[in-house]
Amino acid sequence: MTATRNRAPEGDPISIQNGRLHVPDMPIIPYVEGDGTGPDIWRASVRVFDAAVERAYGGRRKLMWYEVLAGEKAFNLTGSWLPDETVEAFKHYLVGIKGPLTTPVGKGIRSLNVALRQLLDLYVCLRPVRYFQGVPSPVKRPELVDMVIFRENTEDIYAGIEYAAGTPEAQCVLDFLRTTFPKDFEKIRFGTGDKVREFLAMLGDGGDEGAVEVGIGIKPVSRLGTERLVAAAIQYAITHRRRSVTFVHKGNIMKFTEGAFRDWGYALAERAFGEHVYTWAQWERTKAEKGEAAANAEQREALAAGAILIKDAIADITLQQVLTRPEEFDVIATLNLNGDYLSDALAAQVGGIGIAPGGNINYITGHAIFEATHGTAPKYANLDRVNPGSVILSGDMMLRYLGWTEAADLIIRALEKTIAQKIVTYDFARLMTGAKEVKTSQFADAMIANMDGE
Ligand SMILES: NC(=O)C1=CN([C@@H]2O[C@H](COP(=O)(O)OP(=O)(O)OC[C@H]3O[C@@H](n4cnc5c(N)ncnc54)[C@H](OP(=O)(O)O)[C@@H]3O)[C@@H](O)[C@H]2O)C=CC1
Ligand SMILES: O=C(O)CCC(=O)C(=O)O
Ligand SMILES: [Mg+2]
Image (cartoon, rainbow, N blue to C red; front, side):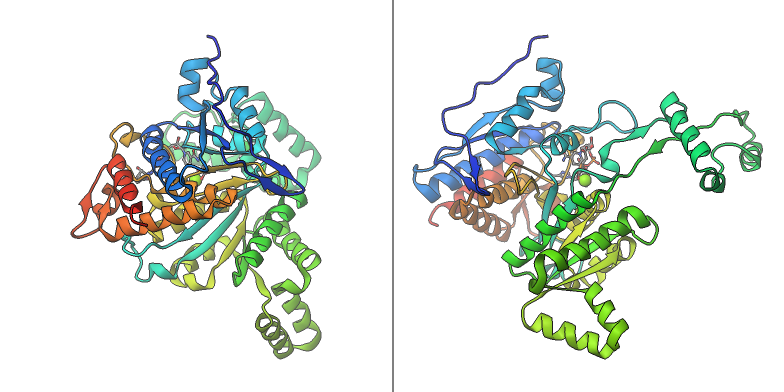
């Protein structure tokens, strides 16, 4: 199979100098349509982006779209799931946008989404979660949900270091652990011994009690990975005048990965952000030295002077408290898996995954790929049915990242207006009374019509 490569359109690459993005008036933006519902959503969203830019800048600025291939379309055309040209384009043009890509469960290729994040070292997965008036929600006060998730995007179990049960690789790791750390290993009896015999007898099946069937996954969490993620979250909180940053972790159980994330986070906050922040770690130290009243007074004073509260919460209770007291959560900094779970759970509170945008960003190199939080929703593929809101809002994030705020504002106002008119796709319509259910493409039409007269 020969590689099919689209030609880059006219236009100029975005560049970065001294940490500042330089965005030409006609930036070349690589995009991937995505699998499943991706093409339907992309066709609708790109019209919204172009309409907003046209109306905001009257032709002076234009996004020059450059299709690059990934996923099923890439495999069918080139024989590669993620052609080198695609990765090179995202590297060269700095900022891009993509639709969702399929990842098979338990077998097959590893996630192309995760691969792109790792290949470009996009260490922040930024997922803002806010409520738009009129969107149906399962909670009583969805307007209280205004959180911004900073999910570490390159490490944790998403590093992809795992070995299937029964393979020589898994056996090698098990043998290494058994011989190097015999005490730790003895605590857990993997697939052998009396417990297994009892279990097999209960089932009445003739399983092989001698076989060791243990899949192995490794969870790396580094200080660098933690610090750059936490720095981005705190910097965002300072720039956007947010109240707090909460480190969400499961550090009581995973002490040296998730616990270290918390501790490195607090240390970095105090070391790098000084007077801008007040941390619960500071509060604990003052309490130990001078008592609780003094610690409370110190915290009150720091917050009154404008410091951002840096606190932490264990992941399981967080999933309850974001529902029961959402006003206590603002910016959230967390590890990769926690952030993945939290993103979808929080999206539910403000209308669901159809309106959940995101961006994968390296704030140092400037590289960024914007994408929805949801996946390919394959049962709706090619039906022109799903909500394009998540990709449209990812485009809003991209435009703001480029500094094209006038166009981004137009998108937000058009979205608000369209929802207020109760013109919505199936996902919202099924939960609303008096809604006019429209197709993906018609939702884009309505948004564009709502930009007129702005
Ligand atoms: N970044 C990426 O590219 C991601 C890729 N994936 C991949 O996507 C595939 C499918 O994953 P799956 O777990 O089913 O999750 P999906 O997010 O694809 O879909 C789950 C459900 O969410 C709802 N949904 C999703 N997108 C929309 C939308 N645009 N508008 C309205 N509702 C929507 C639908 O709910 P309902 O049935 O209620 O209508 C759908 O059935 C997997 O291969 C997975 O790996 C998953 C997440 C992210
Ligand atoms: O890569 C995938 O298939 C899933 C990724 C995902 O769920 C996410 O990034 O939120
Ligand atoms: Mg996810």
